[in-house]
Amino acid sequence: MRSVNLAARALPLAAATVLLQPSAALADESEFWIELAAKGDIAEGTSLKVEVEQRRKTGPDEYIVGAVVDHEIGNGFSLGGGIEIHDIDGFTEVRPYQQVGFSTGILSLRTRIEERFYDNSDRMALRLRQRVQLSDTIAPRLKASASAELLYQLRDRNDGGPERVDQLRFAAGLTYRVAERFEVSGGYLLQLRPRPGGDTYTHVPQLSAAYRF
Image 1 (cartoon, one colour):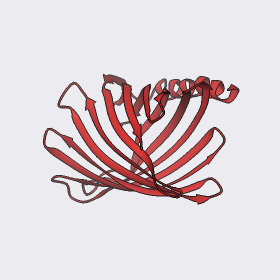
Image 2: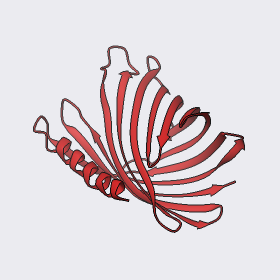
Image 3: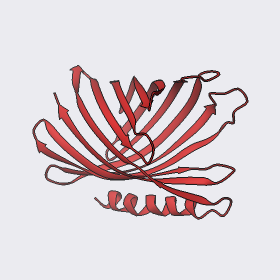
């Protein structure tokens, strides 16, 4: 419990430190993400999650369908992979990815590599994602979590595009087990996109529901 409280204090402070950098002006945006998912074990030590998501924005909304499989390999480690298909007003991105995870107690780490295929682009883009997360049960059926994630663009979709920090994400949320096989989650995500011409940060309330099979 104490570790979760410390994380809940530390992550907003880390976000504030980044946002207060004087290098560029910050533009404010907002979105609302809604997700429906089904997840469960499909073999011993192997889990499957399928999801559909809507990201409501000022302009055209973004729609996502995806699936991911994770397999436990022992000593807290797991290997997995999945795919997401993103659509914004007819513009499509297909995003397969691979990931390795490690968890011990309330701490979990995840490293993910994404191959990103866009409509009308020069080539496949490549992105690295590193996430640190703390989660713990704080009451019967109720779990709290907090995370920080770095998203780094290893290769741009267009020739000559930059390698750079694509995003920094800071998130916190609660998950409540409504029934044995059904849970709902609510949370908040802060996205920061550092850019030479002016940084952008996005406030993202999140709502999700998941069925466990």
